[in-house]
Figure 1 (tube, rainbow, N blue to C red):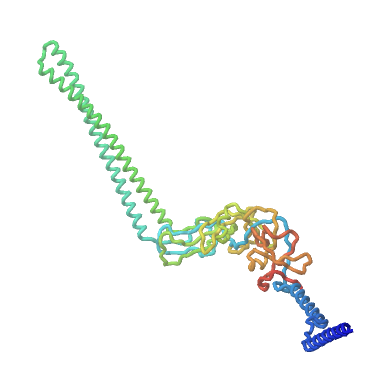
Figure 2 (figure 1 turned 120 degrees about the horizontal axis):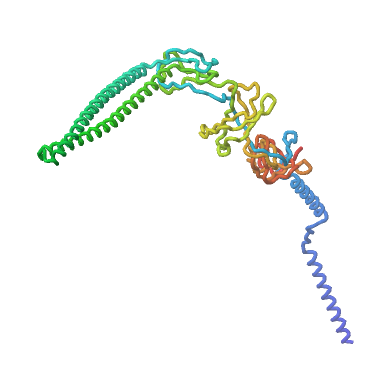
Amino acid sequence: MSDKRQNGEESKGLVGMFTAERQREQDNTMDRRIEKKRFTPRRITIGGLAAAVIAFGVYVLLSVNPSSLNVDAEKLTLAPVTYGPFLEYIVEQGEVMPLTTIYLDAVEGGRVEEVYVEQGTHVEEGTPILRLSNANLQLSVMQREAELFREVNRLRETRVTMGQRRLSMRAGLVETEYKLRQAEREYARQDEMFKADLTSRQEYDEAKDNLEYLTARRDVTVETLHQDSLFQTIQIRQLEESIDRLRLNLELIKQNEENLTIRAPITGLLSSLIAEVGESKPGGDRLGQVDVEDEFKVRAAIDEHYIARIRSGQAGSFDFAGGTYDLVISRVYPEVIEGQFEADMEFPEGMPEGLRRGQTLQVRIALGELVDAMQVPRGGFYQKTGGRWIYVLDPTGEVAVRRDIRLGRQNSQYFEVLEGLEEGETVITSMYDNFGDMERLVLQ
């Protein structure tokens, strides 16, 4: 009994202990702070809405690229990329000029005494235009005439003297030959007598010496006469050549004197006359020019950048009075003045009617042969891009995207496309100044 009682008491003690412990735990639980849950349904709903708003904003920002620009399509110039015949040429300004121009220069300087014809007058070949006077030239003519007269007299005197000398020498030769014949006869006689012992040795030797002397004298006289004749011939020829030179100089001086009267070298238009009565003109000064009428050429002023690509024989053309006319380069002037050089162009098939001297033409000069090439029309875009890129429309035609390209040759209407574009694509060729560096243009 006592044991059961003890066991019961122990059970009650354990139960009480557990009960007290549970009570303490409950007390402790009631004293502890209860934390609120972080993700409540309300917060989850608000977060979802915020995420949706952010996602929509990102979508809007992505759909409207910050490097895109809305532009008015009506203010743009659109052009297709084509493939076809391409001719590289340049357009330069040319002036209609006379085909043949003869300049009037003062061969000798002088004072303008008379002007016979006014500028702008039609003149025939040989027509006197003006007259100069030159006192020094007139004095020079007189001096040359006096020199010529002296030389002619000298030649005449020399010929007379030489003739007299020749006669004297011939007379001496005749005398010597006469004495030589006598000496020959005397020697022959003395030789026979000496052999016959009919004469003395002295007389024989004297006859022999006299013959030898006269023979030698005759030979010397003949040689002297020959040499003197050659000398006289040379001297006379020199004098005659001197006279010829004096006559030629005199003719030239007289021609210069005649050139003091300026005459029209050809039939044509006296387009320029730079002379006034009383004005002094130095030798070589330009007095005017005469142009052949109704025959013209075109002189084009070309940028020095093309000087290595322009040569004689190259073709050109221009538009005039509703038609197109061909030209051919006939001469290139390589001197560069103020960044330009000049070239003369002629009409291979005749000039158009109505063309006048001094008219200005827009001349097309071909720089190569006609070839097939990809090409795009010229436009203001080139000023911004330098031909390195261009805006290309997508297939919808609503968006234009910037694309790198490479251009080659050009003419007044097209650029040759080397890389970056395909036939049939559409590009924007107008000015790009208002587009900045935008990658995309949205056409509205």
